[in-house]
Length: 340
Image (cartoon, rainbow, N blue to C red; front, side, top):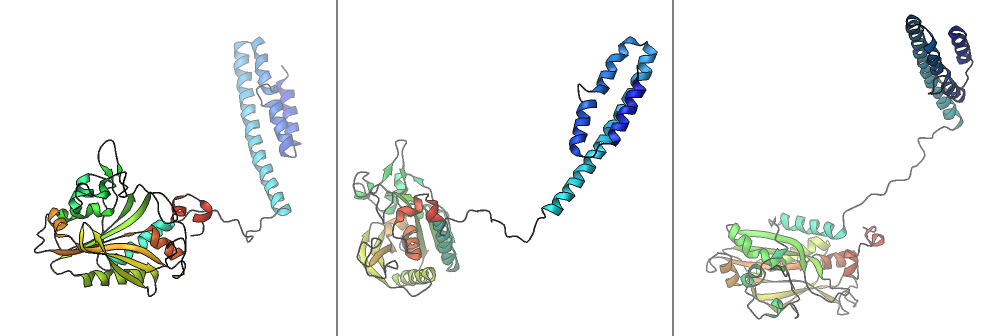
């Protein structure tokens, strides 16, 4: 077996390799599964046991040495190639890059957080209610009697009833009596959240939207307190003087009750689809909490008085950003949402 001649030839050929391509060809020729070095082991079969052991160890030692040299040469050639590439195609680290596109807060979430922050500065605490409610909290506890239109799923009340029982809350007011029983007066809270109504959708109506409920209960609370809180909130939210009007209204859970209209900021009172061409947008309902509601909350209406208000989060957001269709907020249209 002419191992010494093969060994000398492999060593001399390795010395003459000049690049990665030649090195790869060399590795395949001699170190691969079908390479010449592996073939040397096949020739050991004709030798004696001692000769097999001696020559086999010599071949293994030589193979390990060649593999080590090949690895070192590979690293050297790759380093040389990288240096050449830097010289021929340098990277300018000062070139402007393409900024990755990132997400951002949804406009309704942003407005919700802003409203919460304003009320917190006025001493209100933020709490949550249940979206899936029972009829007692959604209706009875709020002084809404059996037969009232709001309780009829097919009427103007537009309530969603579930086959499994219960309703999807039609207003965040449903949490009022829950918290009256949990918190000792004085109670000063806001309850933001999603509500559901069986609506014919248009530019100013959706089947689900966000609402913010507020209640303040203490021994001495009046309509003057209510007006002051709402006036301050609207000024802080729209960051300017706002023009509002209070109209007497009716809600089963408040007495007296009021509708608060605000001069439309989308058209500045000229008339548009947002304000239904009237120049005014109904922005919230409010009033003094009905004694029956206070009683249903486990409190004595002779001792405790309070006011409540509820406003949509979507409509003030429309007025703030001059958006004329409420459905855009829930459309998932990225062209619309990327504007915020």
